[in-house]
Image (tube, rainbow, N blue to C red; front, side, top):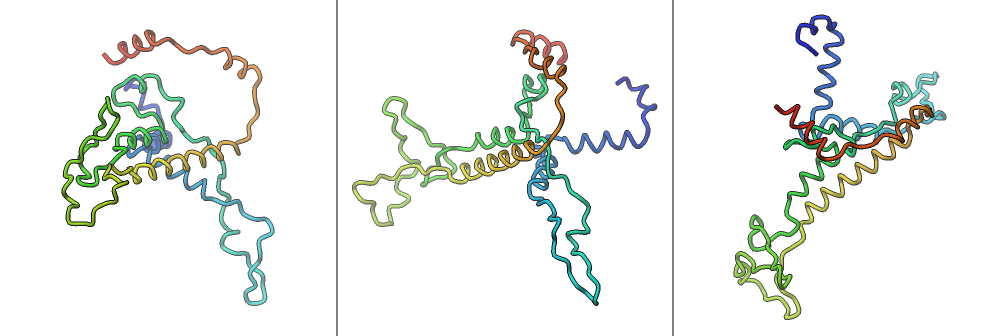
Length: 211
């Protein structure tokens, strides 16, 4: 929008836009969107036949029954559909879950037990691990059996973090399956006929808007 037109926007609409921009911010891997999805995933639908609590000779429903209904379905921003310019830019944010996986992928898969902060190399010819950074650091301990060698360890922390993201992603998929909406056949057929742009066209668009 052109700047002179902003004065036509009401205070309420401006506040809504500000809140939406903050809610959809990519800071900390879409922190606010992730929190909202996790909150919906943890919500359990209220039971209609809940047990009443008797107090002073009169029945009163529990606090849970007094709460307003909470949404139990949503369509999470997984990240497979994103803005084209964001994908082609250097600092792109591929989505709630993919951005987390993209960041976790940078962590090492293996850890040198003698120097955890050192990278672990692999010989491309023999396909064996390179020599550990400080092989004598465990010399004061009992030696390993002849059938075992001191080798790099699997980065369990990285695998656990990835598993947490995948678990959250699956929860989001279940939430999306609960969304019920009608299908407009005309719009649906038009969507099936859409075609993606080729790489050269996408790059040309990026060059045009990045100037």
